[in-house]
Image (cartoon, rainbow over all chains, first blue to last red; front, side, top):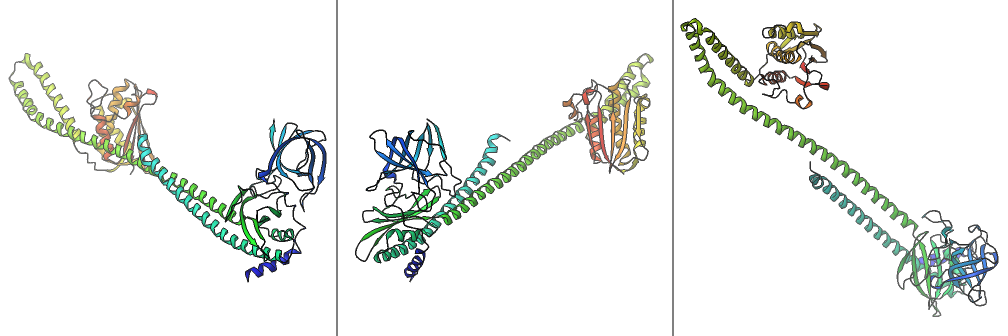
Length: 144
Length: 413
């Protein structure tokens, strides 16, 4: 009886639910964390997650092997720094590869012009999200 | 009180009580947290069971996994949800936090629920197996917010901290009070012990003095009689020596009388008296010994000031002070003032002599304490006994060593 009630409730909610979910491999997987140094080729703003503001995405070229990655930084309102094509960046993030698409790195940490920006915590929780533990903002860890 | 004793009797018990309270509060809070977590776990496991059944049915009906997950995420308490294949590969997922799906091997457990710490609070994660009718096997990975439980546990933590703080405060106040009471008790005990020793000392002196006075008086009376008889028989040229002997015998008799007086119990017969009359009587009595006393003592008292006292005893007490003052002041004037102060009468006697050092202020009333070459240290001692027998007090001070001041407080009439 309880199961049936839940089923009806869920069916009722389907109509009000948001659009389709995320691509299966596109999440911050701590087991697939990588660190790269790359040069910025292109800067784009793209919707990455449904119902959220467009994300700042850097198309970069790995300094080592020349591979191209899309680096998902943060919502544009959160990362309010100037960034230009040709600049060198160092990124720590989780690699998400999907067949037929440019591999994406969901960035956790970005080093730009000697400054390090913390974008997510070590489990991939976004720093722009609030929570009971107080306001969260972009954390600069100082110059290196 | 020694520092070690303070530690042993106050600080240590206080710390013991505080540690006990804190431990009890901590254990209570821990037990509450475990019970709450257990309850929430049970409830969420049941919910997960319902959801897996619902998801199985949707999958059986051919609904796309993404749609099913969106439906589940519509529940505000669900932070993330993922549908995994039999090998735990992610088939579909959704999360309230962009890209946040803590499904690492270190986060997800094989069986049963787990709790993941996140900046949004603690998240209850559940990996529940499910199967469709056609035999396909999946896992439903769910992350629930534990905000309700967090708030409850947080309240419990605050209450625990508050109780510990109160216990600390109450303990501090209690032991501080206990320490003060104990300190006062110790001080009073010391005073009582000192008083007891003084009384014991006085009793010994009294007994000794009474004995000596009694033993000396009888032969002294005989000696005075013999000298009187001899006075009639000796030739005129020996009369001078005999008179000297008689004077010495009288001096000894006077000394013995004073000692006897000092050890007697003072029993005043109080009556209403005019203060200025008492003071003048003391001056008149003193004039017998010190003839210029009336001219050197200035009395400044209103006639209306009346006290309740034994006339002769009080006059004697004041006489003793005046005599000391006259001896110490050379030719200087002695000032005596008196005034009414509520139910009491205050008499102040000031001289302009050399005064006395501060350490002597407490000792001037001790028996046999004297700074004079020929004094016996009896006069001020007797004065104090007479004043105290009237329910009064007396204190001596010598501000800046410029003269002495005796302040007497007596009951008014």
